[in-house]
Amino acid sequence: MDPINRITVIAPVNIAVIKYWGKRDEKLILPINDSVSVTLDTSIMCAKTTVCSRPDFSENQLWLNGIKTSFSNPRLLNCLEKIKHIAADQQSVDPAVLSWKIHICSENNFPTAAGLASSAAGYACLVTALAKYYKIKTDLSILARIGSGSACRSVFGGFVRWHAGVNSDGSDSRATQIADSSHWPEMRALVLVVSDNKKHTSSTIGMMNSVKTSDLLKYRAQYSVPKRTDKMCEAILKKDFAKFAELTMKDSNQFHAVCLDTYPPCVYMTDVSHKVIEIVHAYNDMCGEIKVAYTFDAGPNACLYLLQPDVARVLTLIKHLFPSSSPDFVTGLGDIEETETELLKS
Ligand code: ADP
Ligand code: DP6
Ligand code: CO
Image (tube, rainbow, N blue to C red; front, side, top):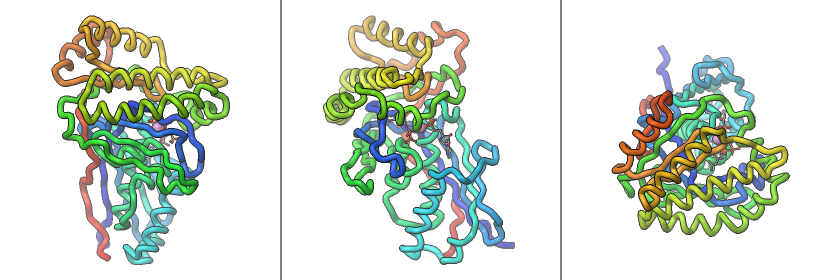
């Protein structure tokens, strides 16, 4: 029997504290501003992707969350084409292997397309698995970016910055690590799933509409984000939680203001999301200092950042105010992982 050549990778989500919203190049996925994120531990939320190719496979196939899905997604095709091209250049595997069809099976253990960064974990996982499968040496952040912008940050653990870059070919639009996952061991993320429904407007479409119609987005990208990004990196390096939290909340609020300034408006947050904001501010006021930060991606679900000593109290408060809420996810920081490998012999 033929050996089964396959590889499995597990990748984390990352939740931005300075948001990416708006592209200057749709095809290459080049952003209009830098962004900063925190990569969460994979023990609770992750994407898991297995890739496998064989000479007897008759077509490329993709399964997403157990459902056979069309392989004709241009972003997926782009990533695969680019990786095979690099493998051919680097002669990293036998050329025959590159002609074999591939099967890709990917699953998220959390809601997909609900504003919890599934595209980030999903594409970071996919390109890492493919790059390992074809044994190429390349910048994984740039490859992941071609799948989904936010994915370029999930190839690193800890605190990560995506540099927008200036080159028109995207060669300098990549993420770097600000500090690794052990830098701030008390840091926790509490993910509150308000709704696991698929969002009505994907991030891709939402930000395209914002670039076309929002004046506030221009101001944000030109003035607010550059100042905030530098301050955020400094707060992370100094482990200044109050500053980190203030910048995180202000940036989330401005991002959602841009969504409302978009025409037609993109309304991602719900009454429950707004209630969470109110509770966090009330809690911080009661403590007399900022102990918790909220941030919302393009969806209603909250990600709260807080330090370990505050987790129990905040969880109790949330359970008290939302008694019927489902169990929430509390995680620390983490890194991308490879699980099972049975590689091709070259
Ligand atoms: P989210 O807020 O979850 O990132 P997006 O609208 O940005 O939502 O992206 C959702 C899309 O990302 C999905 O429709 C799918 O095309 C892609 N995606 C999500 N998870 C995966 C995965 N594990 N593997 C490949 N693609 C994925
Ligand atoms: C609000 O990376 O999902 O989560 O690049 O079109 O795939 P595409 O969009 P995506 O957008 C993420 C937007 C965000 C903010 C962020 O993660 O920085
Ligand atoms: Co996304």
